Image (cartoon, rainbow, N blue to C red; front, side, top):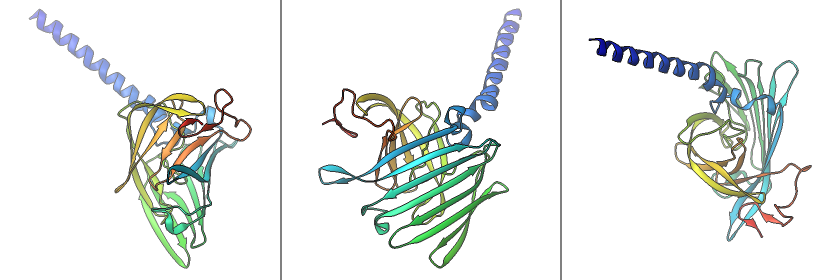
Length: 276
């Protein structure tokens, strides 16, 4: 009997400790590092943060640069943030974005002190279409009012507290530390229709990637929509170094102008394939 009491006591202690650790992870750790939330992106070291990526398309035997996308996080003294994305494409793009030809896509999101989205604005300008979308979060729903030409529409989408709405052509911004097997979802505003939808994201594996004269050990992240898949390669500190987007474009992270330079030993480098 005494032996059974000892075993039950050990099992009970183990169960209590496990429950305590799980509870602590859920209540304290997870909200800070859960990808897809503003809390995971708007960390103190990113209070004034900027990132820029070149946009490339496959043309015969090489990649051709057709534009860029630049995202900035601005912190205000009142504790709010604004996240802006500026995307410029200056060449026809085959695939889903073909009908837009060259286009400008601009997004601004305002994040409150509680790190919840407050409002969102998206504008799309191309030779064939001009559209604008304004969004507000009301009672846990993202309400988008879109004007495209002479047509106006209103769309609603549930938005859990703290969850992000993606800027620009990519659902990824900066990320917290990743591990293989992590999964999350992100709301996006489709640049073709300016309607909201969800994409699923999963960390598949670790893989080396050549970028800026060095080989980086990255996490490979898969992005899935209803009909398409794409991948991104993310550095250990959460920077997206390369991304094949859902729209058939390839993004390559660029150093900002003040720190741009040549490859590791002064050689010119192809951002995709290493030194020329």
